[in-house]
Length: 66
Image 1: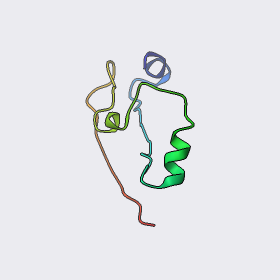
Image 2: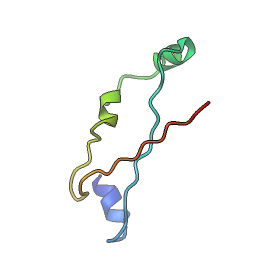
Image 3: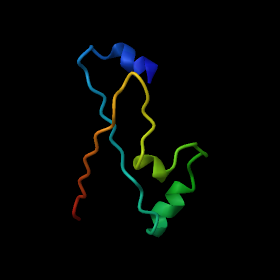
Image 4: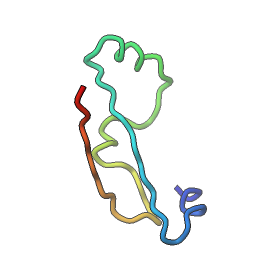
């Protein structure tokens, strides 16, 4: 996060965007199993780890219909 803060102008904002995989679909579950291990989980989407110098996280969710 320090590098992001360094390159943003003083009034700049950081936007975090991601999708959560629906592992109920067999192919998506298989695809997710191909990833190397990582230390973040789907729980991180509820409480993203963002620290100083960034302020409180604002959240906006939009569910797309198929």
